[in-house]
Image (spheres, rainbow, N blue to C red):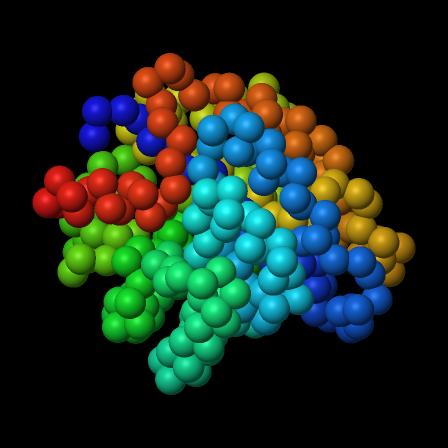
Length: 286
């Protein structure tokens, strides 16, 4: 690849898909949807000539069908983020295959064309499930993270994968994309999106991100609708101090921080969807 590549992605899920909120028993209709309030973000990306990849949870696709059509019409890539946002590592192969097949079909029926990308909820993918993705017609997965900093992550062994470049790997024709991490003493910590992006002061994120970009020709950022919108979670008073901190920390400044984050890319960087990158690689006979 001549240019560096920067992948911007959105995990299109709602507040009640967050696993650490399950124990509170909130009715999913109790609070407004964050997903429906995100159109301004996708319009901003289009204005910046940034083609994002949007990983959609299947069980909310029909609820937000018109919005997904608009996002797709803007040129952003639509992909799959499971059916019910269950941890992939907690599912049997049969359950995973059946649910992913349903989610894929539901999303495709709305946007009117096939989708080829998948991201596991909470980066919970397993090696065994990758074979199922390929069987179902997916061309790539974006679920690998070299970290156990979140209790819901699953650390895959990718030692047998072919390394393409930077955060990109390939196994038997299926591409795998990694979420960037950095080493902190004996641990590896994420920083390229979600709660960890919100946790660090921006000056620290800038330092780590620029250092990572210098070493890798590929980089990524991910965000969720409840972070894009940024208003305080309505059920915060019922949460433990830890969970309230986890969902609310710096959410109202995410959009502002994101606009600064994309400016860290140099002039040789191309913002690209995951699928476009995969097709470029295949065209060049990876």
